[in-house]
Every structure is written in C-alpha cells, then in structure tokens.
Length: 225
Image (tube, rainbow, N blue to C red; front, top):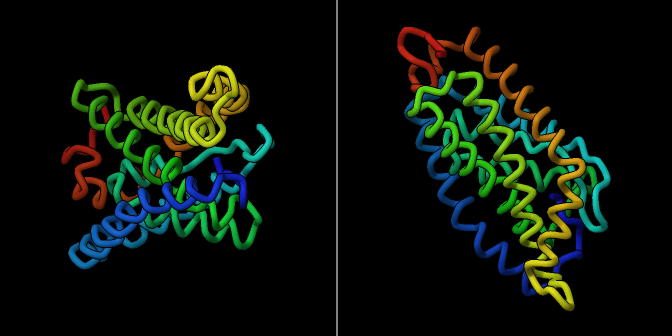
C-alpha cells in the first residue's frame, strides 16, 4: 500500500480515482450528518483519524514501488462504519503524500480504494458478523482490524497485478507474486495492528462508555463479552 507517485499507468490512476470518488463523497455526507445529529462524537472521530494517520505513516520497505505498514482504518470502521473512513483516509493519504512523500497524488485514488474503502468495509463486516455469533468483544475487534489490514494488501496486490500482469502467467501469477512478497512483512504487522486496536478500543470503552453505548458498539449494560 501507498503505491508511489507515478508508479501506475495513467489509465489505472484515473480509473481508481473515479471508483473511489463516490465513496469519498458519500462518506463526507454521512460524517456531516452524524456530527450534526451527535456533535459529541467529534472527539471519537478525531481519535479514529489520528489513529489512522499515525499507524499508516509507519512504513517499512516491502517491494519496489510500494511499502508495508499498518493501516489503522479498522478502529474508525468499527466506530463509525466503513463509509466514514473514505474521506478520512483521503485526507490522511493526501497529507502523507504532500508532507512525507509517502504515496502520491496520481496514485491517491488507488491508495484510497485499498486502504480507506476495501479495508474498512472488511473490518465493519467482520466485526458485525463476529458479534452476531457472540464472539467476545476483544477478539471481534482483533480479527476485524487484523483481517482488514491483510485485505488492504491483497487489494493492493490485485491493483498492481492488474496494472502489471506477468508476461507468461498474466494477472494470477502477478497477483501471487505481489501478495507473497507483501505477506512476509504484512502478516506480523496485521497481528500487531489487531492487538493495538484492541488496546485502544478497551481504553475508549473505559473512558467513553456513554458514547459507545449510544453508538451501539457495546451493550447497554457495558458488557463486552
């Protein structure tokens, strides 16, 4: 993730921007509506944005044209739903591209799709499914954040494979190559992100239990099991 500036062919860069734009627009709408209805949630929204910015800025070299790092989007997706993370992710990625030379402007759409759309939707879905079958709260948060992190990198692998298919094996061979290279660094990073997300969520449960109950993240009784 964070495909570097100019790495994607022009058609792919434009295409991913077009795909990501509606998610960003709708996400802005949902955030504005939520803040107007529940202005007390501004602080939690800020926490989710800061968590994403800090974790996704911790890059480790992975494969030419990209890098590995935690994503941090699982927390916000669990708290506010996946659509809210598209505009938050866009702002985070834009600041990192401009200030940290991390990612790029031409590849912004592709990076938004993998980190701020695919990952958050996976996190929200996994968390809801886990809770619906009574998986303990902490483990639900862990698997949602961890698997969303991994799905982000599988999405990036697919984007790169689509742009640069293997001369002999096509998309499939290229996807396997990119995904395998990413997995070396991403699996331990995903586990670490899952654990850190649990720690942060437990802190929020302790100090912001009222807001989390209103958001139906935890039960009215405050039980997390």
